[in-house]
Length: 484
View 1 (spheres, rainbow, N blue to C red):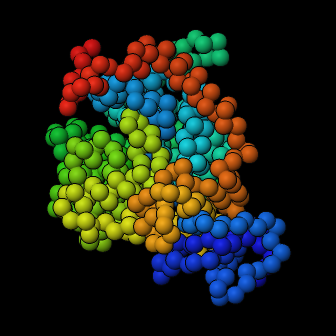
View 2 (cartoon, rainbow, N blue to C red):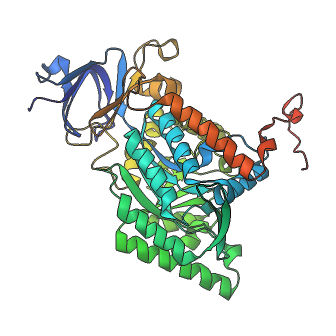
View 3 (cartoon, one colour):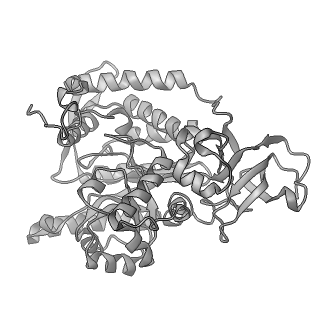
């Protein structure tokens, strides 16, 4: 074996490889951007002459976590709306379409990527907007801002871009360097042009660490109840799929439920390249559509949509459908801690079946690693610790009271760990965080910039009052939403 650039020693390796090996006193060698060797110190000495040796005593090594569904922008609208979900969606629409600048999207991306890095999330798919289907694809500058932040962070991001929901043209507000604004109508065709530009500039997630996916709104039976509506939706789907096929990129959607997956199949937008978010209250026809097309499901157990309906994860898995895990982003009431979402997933389904045997820790960990990599079409390179795969490695500090006593590392990761336990993060063979120190990022600057851009955005749309916590948070079992 060649002399490695990095050698990790004395770790407990949870490989999530084909045999699901857990190796005590493991060593992991990294050469360039790949894992060049992996073994047990009990079975022989590791290679010598490494450029950097990291002693992982007391650490659990695992593949980088993968967050398969989130939203850019949400990091700067956390909690806005005082817990009123309808007001929060209104905030998203106002901020994303009329209150945000490229500086806003850059600051939000830097904050999000910092949180992910500190929590061991090395790869993510994120929509450039969201809320009420507001996608900031009127100009490539917004996507450029996010992707440039990804390059700076060292992590991997697949940015999902696409058209918003009709009618067209949609109006977006742009701000000049002098602070003056103007409203511009944006057509469906213009949004697709921007998507194509971003694909051409950034789609290289394995090497450049920035990828691009396409997306479009989810449609339900009520949306296509007449011939003209169905025609418009088919035309949108055909145009998005033509671009997807020409550029060979992934496709994702946000918000499937109650028959919409079967409708998406009938519209011709599903295949193995598709990842479908939320997917609650599915019908037998939805199951058949998934089996027929090979599309994957993204489960977001901490999301509000998982309160309104249930994603039938165990049933999907038993039907042979790939299910991966997503955070649904940092707002309005959650974050990017994938350990939290693993724990939520287990309890969510165990409570439904009143059976603690559902969603064992290993399967849940697979959903945030190898299953997610498979859904993204990246399982030959990501999702497990194996020789030849990309060196995306996370070390979790297991010498903590809430992680002790030792033993059963898979259980400790899925049930007891949290983002603050991540000690070291390696992506593409580069050490990005060690001992929770991140030398290449100015954390104070990132936090200050985020606070500054958030305040400006809310001032622009006249919504600063939505940061006041209401009296209805206290004393009652159910908050009463105040009428504005």
